[in-house]
Length: 304
Image (cartoon, rainbow, N blue to C red):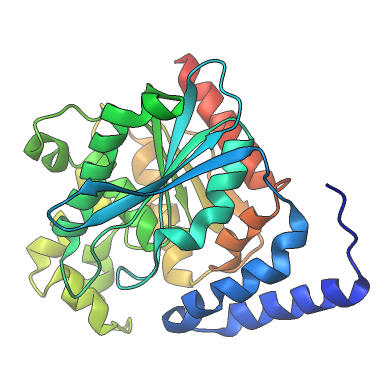
């Protein structure tokens, strides 16, 4: 499909992205739909099939969407994406653009919902992610995915949940299943060290953080991926924006250095000259560098 892009459209898109950068995280998700309309010119994905609203947790009425390539001759790697939203907002339907583009590149993609604050705390949300991964392990072959090649990714608070379920054995042990994750991809993740963040009196705390992690410092540690690192972890790939929130940039750098102690051959953290929300919006562009890095990471990890 060939799309013509007018200069006015480009100016409008630039203006919209600039406006998004200025909006606080509380309001960012409200503007996702506008960004979708403005950025549709950056690529379509007609070669993907979406199966939506598949229930993976009847008790909490949680559902997920699966995006598959139209033509699957061999089982494909699987990419499970966890959305952000400060643990209190966001939903899977906002990431159709990512699911379709990943599927068009030959990767079966799963996007689940999970319980949000204040209806649950970090253990409940992370358990939801573990259940979504369990469903993926058991059913993804029905959609052309390879159950032995399941990768998890997340942006912002979703990056925190993706990392925590990957490194803390509590969640899969509770389900009596081995950890099915082959690799973890963090995109400008927030909350990798909630203990340090919550313990710093100089940093402003949103009420959501207390609702999600409580006021007990031991819970802050338990909910921090950085305190659960171990030598048996699968590979990580990390993206961070150089213009993101300082606490996110510094937290990712700290996490990366901690990871290197266990994974000396860890891929260098990928820095991009973007703010926090554009770190996710960049994936509207199907030719974005992020896709190249992710697909390369999947290929490298599959060979190990």
